[in-house]
Length: 94
Image (cartoon, rainbow, N blue to C red; front, side):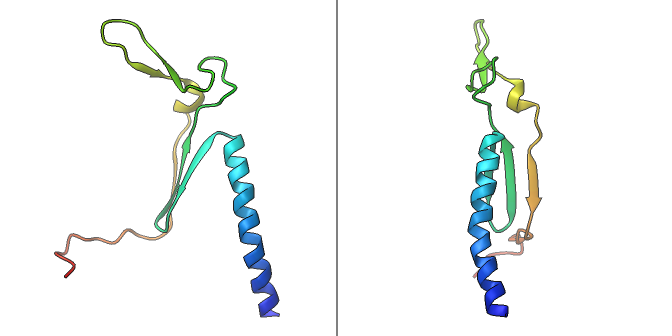
């Protein structure tokens, strides 16, 4: 029974990751994950009528700057901590 459960869980993980990647791409999110954190950042929408997927536009003047579009800049970033980051300030590791 345990082997069957482990096999089902092992098969479900790739399917779940693939489904999550499709959902994140459809909702214009970028995913970064490692063993310490999961980091989700918003991305510009390709269907945005203001920036047309570029994420912003250049303002005029003698010092042009990039102005961010609200389709991604007004959405919050999401951070999920998984494992604590080890403190390396105790001294040299060797």
